[in-house]
Image (tube, rainbow, N blue to C red):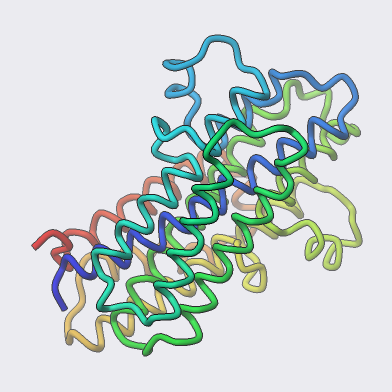
Length: 313
């Protein structure tokens, strides 16, 4: 398969996943601002940092306000990680590999772009935000569902899935890292209602709130939440789950191509660490240090896949 086609599929699904992740972050920020007493516009500073766009926001705006932060994350095309920018980029990649996609997948992608382009054509009113966020999540789900239900399980499918899970793992790890070093303002708040509210917000932003309550009866403990989002093999946005899928899909590609590249070793190493390390060991090592190393390895894996499969050849 041409490297350009692999590149298009890989990034199409990274961008679709990123658009949904950003919408979920905005949703979490809205919930926090609506439920937290004394909430201020500065609460959105943490949301911008979670999305790793705070420096870019500072270049375009002065003081952080809820209105500017939401607009920047949802529809500002100067922000390459805004929902609209990601949907645009995802559709552009889909057009590039149009002949490699099923009709159902292309139509779901194109319809997503058309609907969101209309919804995000102008600055949103507060009352419109829930509908927009739900539309992003629903449309992203429809694209994945159409792809999953209609594509051959060949290298096309595998590259798309790898892109999805690399992006998802990056999102979960960054959100966890920001919680520990940005969201919690002081050690005295640990275990407080503020601490619990922030953890609940984090769980909601990765679609893990209800499933966490099923497993842990709703008791918000930092160690349990970190364990759930890092090491759980059942939680579809955990790091361990993402890397189980990455290793599996890379394995299929390696079998099809009859060779291993550096990305296989990196993915195997990360997955082995996630399978053999306990949450107590991670906490003893330092959650920030663990996540920082994970993010670096996850980025390295993306680069190795790009180079090893000659995405731009």
